[in-house]
Image (cartoon, rainbow, N blue to C red):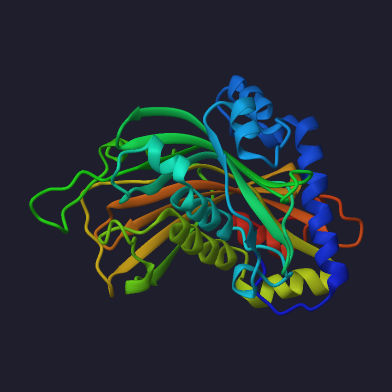
Length: 345
């Protein structure tokens, strides 16, 4: 969440430790799982993600059914954030690469390869591979309702499978429906996505310009979901005051802000076609919980004419960088930015 240069290895280890702490803390504090609509999904996901990793692909498939283990990836400098660990939007990039580069996935879908990631239900940030380290992606096919779509459970682990960094359940990939007009393509699954309810809290709108390199390779008139997460990140940073205030929060109050979950994040097709140079808007509503320890950000990406392009809920946690524990000792000025109201500590 912060965007300033920090070269302390000690802080990098602390942030990694805080994320690992949260994965345990999350199991005991019910409020952190309030986003999820039914508990059987969590039990099923836990069962899937607890499967021991086999280095041999055939053994892996025998254990989990239809699945794959990707090639070994490495974390480069462009993949990391200010802490030297993987930036939260880049996990989706590597899930996409693993799906596109795995022969098992190609045989599960149609022979066409023009599919894109269109939604995810539940992504948990458990830890992070650090700069220079290696990791693999494990995938399990959950549903394949048609030749043009499939649903996967994925996780990022160390090459030997002993450590899990990130997991995502019910990640959907699909091939768009083409028309005679090459620019007029759509995803049938994305045309009836419910609107987020108004949370009745202070909101903010940020505007950004679309550039050619940000559009989807297989769907030239739309943004890929991982690019949507980049726009959401910019808007959340601005909601908290931007880089200067985030730096102040860390240096004066010893607090860093980390992403812990992404839920119900999906592209939306309301008929608008994006082109380079157009402006999009991100609406963000922050819901403060547990006295500021948790901030749930409900975010929508819209075209300049108000058509929804994507939406998602991103959960942030305030971490004391010294104790590595979640903290609710949030400065008054931060609470005022989030709520728009004067708050007494």
